[in-house]
Length: 203
Image 1: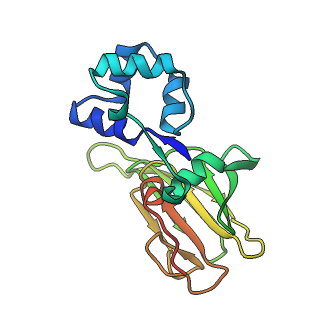
Image 2: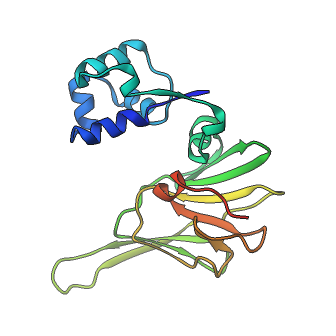
Image 3: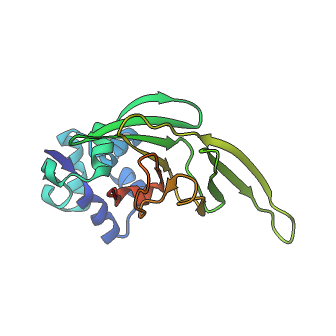
């Protein structure tokens, strides 16, 4: 069982407020906000301050969720263990029942000027465009982000933080989208953070 603060984020939307607004009116730190975002434990004082600021009850901002209702995204956040890290990505492993997952998480957040390319050398490339105004040709920078490795029967995911404009090369180079069916056990999922929150693997 774990604590889920999804109700809090929905309440903020209903009140047309941002997480920054919540920090300002409660005096909480970015560290505490990050813990709430990951459904981690915070002090009762923090909960009381949030309820007082939003004029609501505890049940309006949080609930206890049993393990059988945990999404893959929640398991990743709660039980993920970082086993490797560099300047471009970190590697996280976790289990969902008997299935092991390995997730390569980009350090940088993608934007609408970011293109992700899954190439036939089994490497994922990050392309960043720097557009100019007018008719000038945009500057571009491309570099290899990660060459994901699979071991045994684990499911491997490359998770791109933020919202890339496009992800190319899916379903042709051994990489598949969050909505695809795995054709080969060696296939690797590539997806944005938003897609991962709703992801359930297709076998």
